[in-house]
View 1: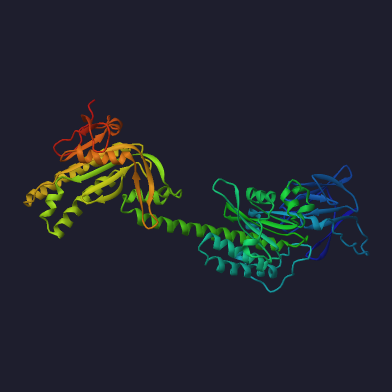
View 2: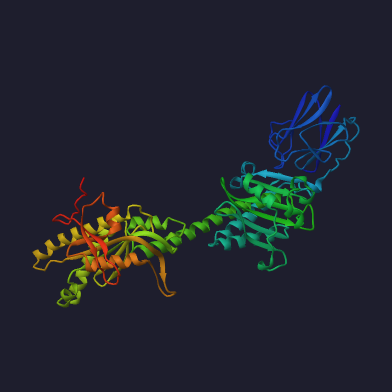
Length: 545
């Protein structure tokens, strides 16, 4: 009769192999319960076939070894040592009742590697439900995980400190720095690297620290093989000696950088993994215990939450700055769209096809001479309000006020394929608004106001343009100059004049009157211009069908 001899929390155990099969695993449903994260819920089965006993791996996370070698299925005989997670189980002939079981040998412990899924950690490590107890055993030197509340209480106390520390950090780099400080304070690590997942999915080292060196002096030493596996598979890894583990033979960084005892855990928040924490000791094997991995895994969760909180805070502050800056240029809807765009579109200088809009009050200079300053201010404020309302209603960008003139453009920063139609519609709406305003002015005994508008479409340079002291979001280029010239020299009172490209792009929407090639100031040749046909109210007439 065979039996298995092993230890649980330092206490010898014996199990007689009777019947047909015996299951081993972490779950209480197994005949042999090995309560450790390194053991899968149903890890292996020992089965009798044709009078012989076989051990068969049940697709476990960390595999099964017989005499130090991984096996999928293998016969076992007395003297064999089975390694299941952190446990060593020795096959023996059943000892007589009066004889004590022989001691349990430890095979290959220095080269053990254990993998734990985040899902298993969540199931097994209920931090929020944890209540410290008075009694319990400490961890064994071999790294076997004690289920005692004493060890878990220590982890809990550390994590309370971690939470208080990280909640104060506002910037991502500040969070990373505090995380690494905590690693060196509470774990026997010599090197630590924080790696984040980049925008395109690659791994980007963000911070490296080495014991005894200044922060800026440490090299970014970590195993790409281990980190990639941790991030991809959402698992935590503890290896007592990475150099001796056959699973890492392909990892050049392990050999080159002499990574021995190491741990690596994901930076994780629920199902989202944003990076990894990698720690190691280059000269020592067996430096870390299972509780160390528990602590590091929990720290990875705390760190990820703090990082995402810092990123969110930075985004909120950025959006507030953008909203404050753009509220005078754009309608609230466009401001919201720009602010929610994390790509920084508003800050880039680029070439873009847009439609430029210029509007000016006819005869303003002479009219202003007879106005008191307060009356002039009210007059301009009313006109600018009508102009801004018309521009914002079509999603345009209000570039600037120049004396009594208004400059705007459509098609940037938000891409608007119909920017030409929007610009003409805004121009016509401004004419309509001014005509309605004139009815009020005439009723008060004030003279009517005339507005002329020029619209032109083409390529411009758009973005933040200016000096170190002042920057404006604006457009530059010949398209702008032509629009200004069309407004000044082509458009008449309460008219909208447009360039050739604008007319072409909106020909299916509006009716136009060709004005022929118009010679504009500063231009060497005449340009085809068109007048938008408006009704008596200033509403544009539709294109003929």
